[in-house]
Image 1: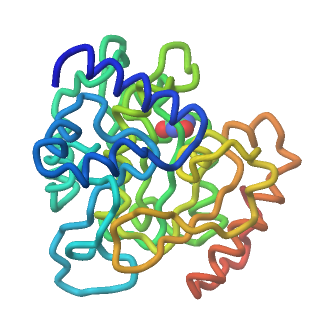
Image 2: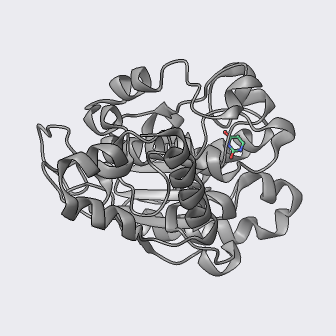
Length: 286
Ligand code: URA
């Protein structure tokens, strides 16, 4: 694709992301125009922006279960906007290799480590945060600072699970400077990796932590206070079953507003009930 066209596509997609829209009409037109147009779309560096730009689930599933990646699930824009290697990654390890020493956005210049994700690759519960902070950047692992300590208490005290029973990732894998919110071009570059992580882990429930992760996953601007405590469905994830999303408050917010921990507790109870898991006896320790 010519550089000007690339810029145009990028700007279009960034705007689309910022607006939280969920359709890219040009992509549908490219689909009708045939393989050359599709290839042009697929090769843009902006590949994988928000909208319905979701990779097709392609990993073979030895034991099908609800939510595991399915073969050939049609996903309108997946081939057009996501790097083919992301779609093709059939394990988290492969996906990490595709990410490589990532230079897809400007966050690479300030990072110390890429924070890809940790936990059980077949977890039933996946947590999604915003992006690494200082501690995470230093250690290369998500949620290891103060907010992470509180997340640990939610997982262990609130759910009776170990960190090794869940999977934890962020929308962006590199630390934004001064912990600012990730910008549209950064989300554009990184979100396809998160989407593919969700496909590959195929959890039964995704818990989005805070407004940012929730808004990216649901592609709209509804405040977290109105989203939390309600079940949502993650559209466009190429799995063989629905992936339920439960938004809740971010642990960093809870550190500042401890009075709202009880609301997170309510949200966690809904998750536990959906998974058919027993609440731990003393689950209010978060
Ligand atoms: N906040 C996040 O959203 N993610 C982390 O990994 C740490 C803090």
